[in-house]
Amino acid sequence: MYTGMLHMHRLVVILFLLIYLVKATLLVLNRKDSLQKFSATLKVPEMIISIAFLVTGIILAFNSGNLGPWFWVKMVAVATSIPLAIIAFKRMNKPMALMAVMFIVYAYGISETKSPSFKADDLSASYSAADPAQMGQSIYEGECLACHGAEGKGGASGAKDLTSSALTPDERLDIILNGKNAMMAYRDRLSPEQIDAVAGYVETLAAP
Ligand code: HEC
Image 1 (cartoon, rainbow, N blue to C red):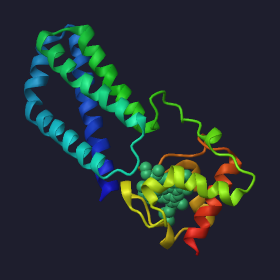
Image 2 (image 1 turned 120 degrees about the vertical axis):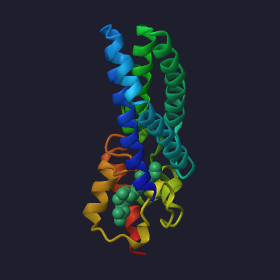
Image 3 (image 1 turned 90 degrees about the vertical axis):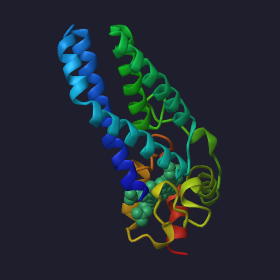
């Protein structure tokens, strides 16, 4: 359910972004007649898209397991963009329209990278231990538990039950490295040793 909602949210956001982009482009090119025609034609679809944007976003937020600081930065960017766009297109103000587009593109980039700087946060310094098993468990508890639950059965953000995983250890490792759907990639967030340690810990949950 969550993952389907995530795909729908992304689709709706892309449509929303495209409408913004076309409108801002027409405004910047002084094509005011075309802008008015475009806005009038898309009035109802735009309303539906905006509502779907909001509703899918709220459903996702309430069912998410781990909303880091990036989420709040994104919220501020979206909350800045929308009133800015409404005023910009009403007053035909080009700089404001461009700013609105920039904020929404920025919010989109944060979502895709789960980071306000579009760069994965390096978490590796938070975990160090002589004993890899201990380190694996600490990383799991610090980074994975919010979605996967203490025993691996949790399902927040559409997380898969790790205790009934049908994947091979290599496939599981691949998802930890590269992420999938709501799960972020850990390739650049943890060191290779830390990835091995947490993957090892996941194997103890998958095959207890
Ligand atoms: C934001 C929530 C979230 C966090 C945090 C998270 N995961 Fe996930 N995880 C998911 C989701 C969602 C899936 C399912 C992806 C899919 O197949 O659609 C998943 C799938 C997996 C799978 C594959 C399971 C299977 O059988 O398909 C593994 C293994 C896994 N996660 C390990 C981890 C580890 C290890 C961490 C911490 C380093 C972690 N996850 C952190 C959400 C999360």
